[in-house]
Image 1 (tube, rainbow, N blue to C red):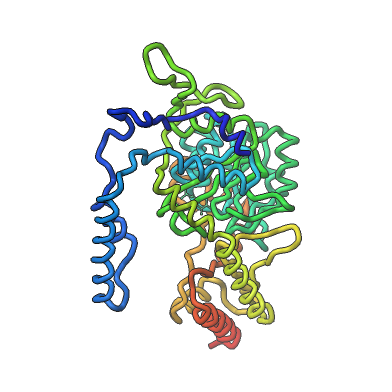
Image 2 (image 1 turned 180 degrees about the vertical axis):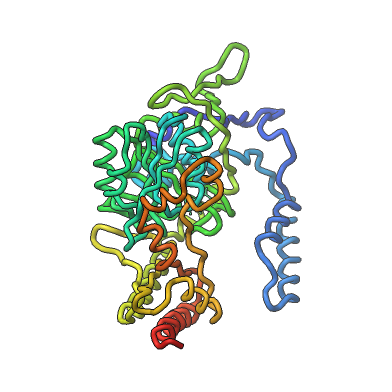
Length: 441
Ligand SMILES: Cc1ncc(COP(=O)(O)O)c(C=O)c1O
């Protein structure tokens, strides 16, 4: 893998080494005060404010000492740390190419661009997901086609995908909601049969597996999110787009304005090229990320397996508590074929048994002090799509499971970082709520 990455075309990572008058980073350095600013931003006072202020003062002194005998780093964007992160991620995923970008949404754009998405094309995505899955197609005049979901997992239903394929379908975007794998085999079969590109929305799914393969590496492209609410993050924002296709050779250009450092025009440092795609040439945007974010993500990657383990244990505990309770449907757990990242805990209710649906359930739970993550709304309910001319009623009719689970059945519970006591209390209150509703109280 390392060799492969070495051979990748360079991007804007040049450095002038030990020149007497160096070029790299000709702006202001990040130094003492900025590092202190970062500490102040990221660590807030605890209960003992006095102790906190004392510790902060000693950190400031230590940082000042450190900077007095060190020197500032010049390379802050797309340097060796970004490269190291990409190498580690590619190795972890067992894929050929990984590219660190600003967020998962940028990764989707890059995948769509290599697929040569354009006006009149169609992209099939699940009715339930986050808006960024469905934002790039309309941006370039392509159409979102919303697939129904499997009510048990709230993931895309391959049978409905098959029904909605047309000769304009260029891309299918399976979304591993909450880190639980989409049934990828039938999706890949449909894609192969109709020559369609698969871009996995693996925003929640870094570290999950489907039949032995890492999520995000099964389709032609996959994109992960390291936004602040994900299992691990890159100082609040970050994304990795990955692929095993030859288009990975051009990830650097796709990330940074088509700048190609491996070739130069006359009297200039580099050339700028269009992206080679599955169709005509496409123009790249700028989705560059920083060394600082890469360092954060590298550090957090070291904790990923432990974070997933804790999440899995909690999901298993909730499963054990909820399964015997009539009217509650616990989240599916891992099997030999499937390993989730447990990014979200999917709780469903049976309105028939409870005498009320998820809206009442959530309200009662919230009144007891349990915050429910506001679950994903069907994208076609948003005004954006109506403004673009989508027929909301017709789409809703074609996605009956989306409508049913959204209005009546599902929510997501938090798993981490909670104390064991909080998890237990949450389980108690979920069960208490179900019992109250069944008892008509
Ligand atoms: C399902 C899903 N897809 C995509 C994204 C977008 O990720 P990012 O914010 O890194 O672009 C999110 C973010 O929360 C998400 O939940």
